[in-house]
Structure formats: C-alpha cells, structure tokens
Amino acid sequence: MTTTRTHAPGLDREGHVTGLGFDRLLYGEPLEAAAVAAHAATCERCAAVLAQLRADDADLMIPLPPRSVRAPATVHPQVRSRALKVAAAAGGLFALAAAALFLIRPFEPGAEKDPADAFRTRGGGAIDLTVHVYDGEVSRTIEPGATVSPGDKARFEILLGRGGFVMVVGMDDSAEPYACWPQEEDPAAIFLPAGNVPVLLPTAIEFDETAGREHIFALWCDHPFHLGDLSPTMIASLFAATATAPPGCSVSRVDLVKAAH
Amino acid sequence: MARREQPEFAEQAKAISINLTTAGPTLALDVGSLYRRYYPMVARRVRQFVRNSEVEEVTHDVFLRVMERAHQFRAESSPVTWLYRMTTNHCLNLVRDMKTRRSLIEQFGPTMWPGAHREDPELRVFVHDAWRALDPELASIGIYFYLDGMTQAEIATLLGYSERTITSRINALEDALKRMDQRR
Image 1 (cartoon, rainbow over the protein chains, first blue to last red):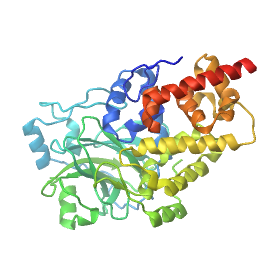
Image 2 (cartoon, chains in turn red, green):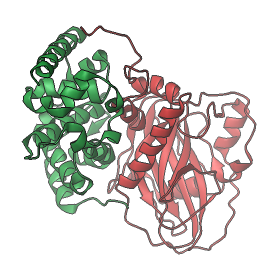
Image 3 (cartoon, rainbow over the protein chains, first blue to last red):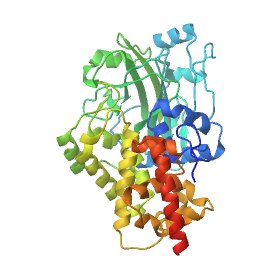
Image 4 (cartoon, each protein chain N blue to C red):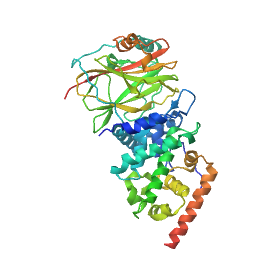
C-alpha cells in the first residue's frame, strides 16, 4: 500500500520539481516557489527543464503589437539616478547568488557597483528589474545596455524588497510609454508582496524593426496607481538620464539598444 | 512563433469581467487578465494531452470554461493551482471522449510526462487503458500521481482534500489497477 512521504512543496516523489511546482515558480507564487527555486538552482535536470519552460512560455506569450519607433541608432545614456546613489549609499544592492537560469538573489549589502549601471537604475531596495530576451532559439538574461534585435521577445523579472504596487513600462525615443505588465489599455499597478525570490512576470513584448533606444522601467509605489496617473512630467522624469520616481515610489530601469537588421 | 490575443475571445472575456480576489483587495483579476497572464501555462499543460495542432483551440476552450466557472474560484486557492486543475480535468475529459484507443502514453507522448519513464506495473496498466475505465476523479488522481509524479500532499492541496483522503484514494486506485492487471 502507498505510504505517505514528506517532500518540500512543489517537488515530486523523486525530489525533482513537478510541473505544478514549475508553474508556481514561473507565475510568481513566492511562498511555494522558494523551495522550488532552491532546488532548481542546484539540480541540473530541473534547471534544464526550467530553461526549456521559460523558452516555451516566451514562445507562447501574447505579445504587444510591434511598435513604430523613430530613433537614432546609437545612443549611450548615462544613468546616474538619485535612486542609484541612495542604493549605493545604503549598500542595498542586489547580488546574484546563483547563475544563469532562475535564481534566488538575496539582498547583499556592500556589493560592488556594476559597470552596466551606466544603463541601469536600481530601485533603492524596493524593486530590481531584470530583462530576459528570447531570440527564437535561446532565452538569455541581458545586461543593461545590451543590443537587442527586431523580433526578439522580452520578459521581465522583478525582485521586491518591499511589498507594493508594481507596473512595468517601456518607452522608446518616441516618448510614448507603453505597458509591459500588466498589459492593459490603462493598466492599474498590481500589488505584489515582498519576497526574496525574483518573480518572472507573465507577459512579453516583441521588439519592432526600428533601431534606437528602448527603456524599460519597473515602477514600485506604496500606493495604487494607473499608468494614466503618471503625468507627462513624471514620465519624462522616469526616463530622464537622472531617473526620478514620484513621491512614495521607486524605479528600476534598464536601457537597451535596439539594432536594425 | 508568437501568439496574438484573439479579439473575439478578448471581447468575450472583457464583457464578463469577473473579479477574482486572490490575496486581498488589491489583487483583483478578471478573466481577461487571467487569459493574458496564464495563457502560456495553460497551453503547456494542454500540450501534454493533445496534438500540437489542437493546442490553441483546446486552450481557448479551457478559458471559456474558466469564464463559466469563475464563480467557483475560492479566494484561498491560487490561480495557478485552480487553472492547473481545471485544465487537467478538461483535457482528461476531452481525451477520454476521443474515439482512438491508443494507450495514454501513445496518446500524450512519453517525453511530456516526467513520471512515464518508471518501470512500474501499475503505471503500465494505468496508462494503457485503466485511465479510461476509472471514474473521472480517480483518473485525474492517477494522472497527478503516476504521470506528474506528485506527492499525496501536493495532490491534496491541488484538489482541496485532506492528505489522508488522497492516500486512501491512491490505495483504492492501486488496488483497482492490480485487479485490472490480473484480468489481462
């Protein structure tokens, strides 16, 4: 007769991650995801499955329609934000605890400043944004300032230091913001609890043919808001070289360069 | 290849717009949001049951069912768990109704199921034909236990039963499979 054996949530009877466990990890249920993420970081088999699932999901994702972008081909934004200075001073930068696939990244005080920070604004300990790009063959975590290509699909991973209302927004040099997550006409920020496990957001965008800069920011606020609540001045501040978040908010921004085919 | 949202379905989802409170008043989701957010997850699960050419249609069927049953969603459940269970039930009913009499593994594809590689006589009986003969609930438990490799605890969480109940059902399932094996 069958006997009851105890395993961590999300792991099967052989100690590997179940399909449901992977889904909980990929779709942001932090409580159940912690054990799964810890296992996937050390198990080659589960790490491979996870990588495949992420690629599959990127392929199945419902993208925004391609956008028309008119912008110069090569720009090197120098981001030195107030948020970055605050984060560096407080030593509240995030560091990678495991490599490559899906990572548990605890807060690590005193981490070195990354050269890629020229293309990144960190969220002052409240939020940190990572961008993953799927080029049709492989999914990779891209460095801020990296070059992406038309047709690439991007997904977004956030790590929250504090619970709050979150939205991910993109903007190119047309200066018209578009919602990356949630993808609605005028999206409302969604409340997410704090957690030391990064959450891969379930929507994707697809880059269009036009070359130029592409800025992605994750905005965290301690209060509810809609994209439409952000005034043009606020939007301009968020995308300015010295990215500044509205009161009660933090912004984590990643700047990319989109190359034409 | 990227899939795009089907306007017809989006309009349908928008029209119903049922709020599903999951973790407090700030996490209100409607079916349209569920569709946009969880489409890949549901489609992946559907792909374990049907041919690639049928995945999109069946996935939309699942979301139509979600709309019909949104009122059954309980706040204490997670959307992932709820959709996983609903997708499994829908697909299992679908393939049970199909005329083909291939074994479950032949029908679903062995590489799609992590538990299918084991040399287990009960698994063999289950995937060959027992999954059709068993009552739907026991068949779904068999899917979770034999093919997904879930623990009793995880199945209990998924189905909203106690772990003791699930252990009892699995014991009954094992007995049924042994009897079927002896008759073959």
